Length: 402
Image (tube, rainbow, N blue to C red; front, side):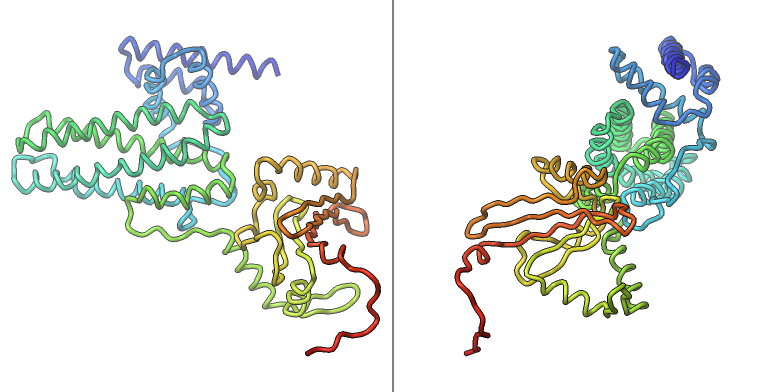
């Protein structure tokens, strides 16, 4: 443990030395060797921790921003981050996929509408093409707004604050550079200054693409839950996109479709006390005079019945969600405690009862265990017991239908 602490302290010290060198006028090439030696093989998250520690000590964000170019110079083409087994950035409609698609669109603008015309800006054709290219490139603002307002808040929620602050600062610098190029283009004059400013903007945009995909994206994929990604996907529509079509990403629907397909193939469910067709089982459970919900041992909602009169609303999007995300913050701790007691074997059931308008609701939780007493999940049973409480006397005859 002490060695780990000392390593972290050493790396923070190295970062300070690098920042001091950059502040004194050293180039990226001059300091990148020191950075590579100290951080070779270290995950991006630890670099972020080191930067966060320096900010906590009072080092200005603007100084940390200078490290961005060092990151890119050292790791470009050789970053080996820890990725999830399934590359979510390949899933159409996933925000990670959309981020990469937009970056490809930005690269296309640079490759097709800007760089080919920079050598000869004196022609009217070249100047018009560059103006159109810069106008399209300026829409990178949409890309950055989504990143800053949807990605960064979740990283900050998990205590990752330094990278978002630094990257946001660089985003603003790129915005200002593009604005400056537009002002030069408005004068319709092909100057060396204009050419150099356009080249500088192109280089900064390319560097940010690299940082997003090799530093920011692995950090996001490693940290965010599926439910958080779903919220980002949903809210992204409010901001807009750089690409024309972004398909709807609905992992719950995809999971449900896979389950339904499997059910179609098997058709019959075999149980110790009998056989039921899936259709029979579905409608039998829906006919019960109470609502049931099953959460598996991984705390994932797997099933709920669909009786005609549900007490609490349930939508199909709940399937596949963690049960903690399905309850209000004020009551989620109660649910988590119940599940913890069931898993530990401390309890096998828990009951609650509440009055709700003209109903008296009994909510019962049961630990579901196999024959070896191994925990499989929890069953929630919800019922309006007011009609039962009002029963009096006896009924021995079948009521005749009118």
